[in-house]
Length: 70
Image 1 (spheres, rainbow, N blue to C red):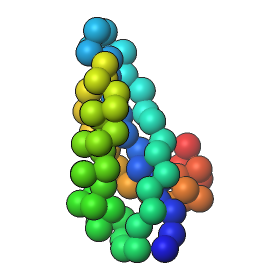
Image 2: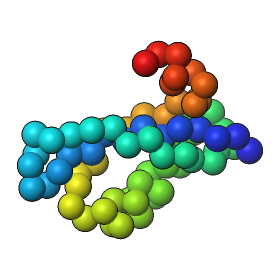
Image 3: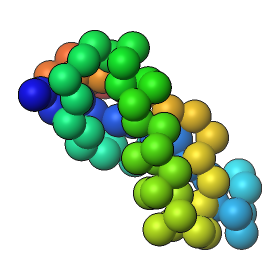
């Protein structure tokens, strides 16, 4: 199993214009494409634990590759 970084763009419900990226570690046995599907239940639970924010979009990346593109 390898770590994949799940990058979630979230916005505040109180201030919809205030958005930022959250970098979450996600363990996956598959590809980045598989991560996009397998991460949905994980994000639903995470969103339930953070009721003051709204998930706008998400993407998966390998941590070492994401650092190179920043």
